[in-house]
Amino acid sequence: MKLRIFSICLCLVFCLSFLNTSASNAKFTDITVDYDRATGTVSISGKAPFAENMSEPVRLVVLKPETDVKKLISGEETFLTCGVHVDEVMLDEDAFSFENFVIPTSYAPGKYIVRIAKEDVAYDGAIPVGTVEQATALLNNASHEEIQSYIEMYNDVYGLDTDDKSIYGHFDSKGTKYVLSKLADKTYSGLDEFKDKFDMYTDIYKVKTGPWGTLEDIIISDATLLGLELNKYNLLSESEQDKVFKELVGNLYESDTEFKEAFDNAVKQAKKSTETSGGSTGGSGSGGSGSGNTVSWSGNPSASETAKPAAPFGDLTAHLWAEDSIIKLYNKGIINGKAEGVFAPEDCLTRAEAVKLLVLAFGGVASNAECDFGDVGRASWMYPYIATAFEKGIIKGYENGNAGADDNITREDFCVMILRAANNEGVILEASSNEIVFSDSEDISLYAKEAVKTLQMAGVVNGMGENSFLPRAYTTRAQAAKIVSGLID
Image (cartoon, rainbow, N blue to C red; front, side, top):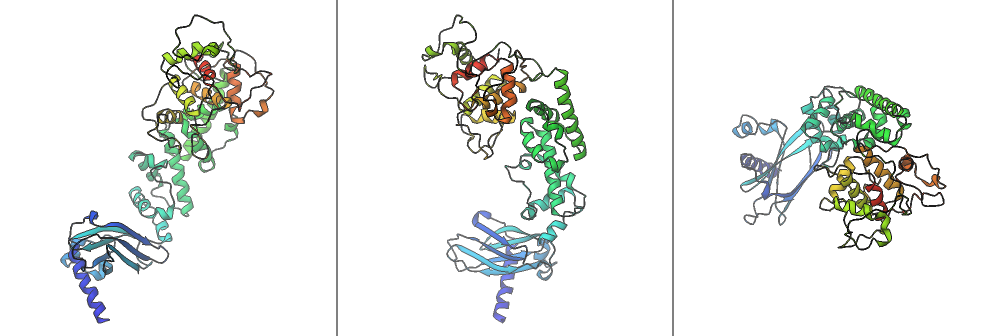
């Protein structure tokens, strides 16, 4: 026992001398700190790949938060008042491990200083000590700076979504300060209330940053949290719902009550603007009219042939009805062939191709647009187009987190994309005919019904014959070119 006490004291002397050593994290690797909040048990392991002096032990010192190391070294403070644990172990080849020492759960919560030393190098770290109850209690009446520090230390307890891919993780310093300041100087009944407030103010600041096309999924899924009543919103058409978020985006709301009032007012205004315009299903602003641009999905032309410029593709002979449209879009740099002289008009259009077509036709690529779909890499040719379409609300992706970029696009989904793209750029789709009730109208997905109806009444699309629409059939490249060409100057 006396030998063990002597060894620990000697270890303490050496460790305190290393407290004044410049840390060199590069010398220590794979440092792992395991801390059990329920019991206070700590284990620390890592590697110290030093070729020389393998007989010298690795030494550990753990100190209480706010310890003044200089005073400890000078003797103004003592290890009895500042220290928590001291130990030394020998290397097992290049690995070391300090196993199962305890920081009593009665100790005050905070960042406990860790210093690991060997030879003339040292590693500095910290252990965020505190039980679940202590970590939760710290939040009451804390400043926003304190809350930020607590989130960094105790988010394994709080469970907040703060990683780089989260909404909060994308905020700049103004955004994080807004959220944290709203959480500060309050008393919480429990952790659930704190988490709800964090999510609520994160959502509200996301409305400020936009883009508007990303807001619906966030706000509507958290409607209960935000105190929103959705009965009137759910009665709006899809284009009217888009108007709600276009109205809200860019504004900073100081409370959930203020945001709720703004949301309710945006819903009223969206409905009112439609009623005032006589039920028009298009967006407001300037742009081409859909009237007179009737295109049959079966590929039959709706206008007489006119003189055509030389075709850049040699496979359009059987698709003269779409040739002008294809050449027009080609000359504008909106579409390309699949190979030199080959357009492949009967090939199915993929979702990525559809997105590129609509983005280039309506507004162009947004230089700073970002998206996080699992099947769209940043280095891919399609990324800037899909990111732009996502931020503009033209696409939303699948529930599995993918964009379905390589999937063939159905006619109903293409109609949805077209309407969103047109509305986003203020293209007016004026009704030029009565609604056609297709024989397979019940097969049209609920989310696509308005888009199909709007484009059909505007003369943009018709059925496939025998009064059917075939919403789940795929769109061909020729059909897509004909339709989009008729909607742009």
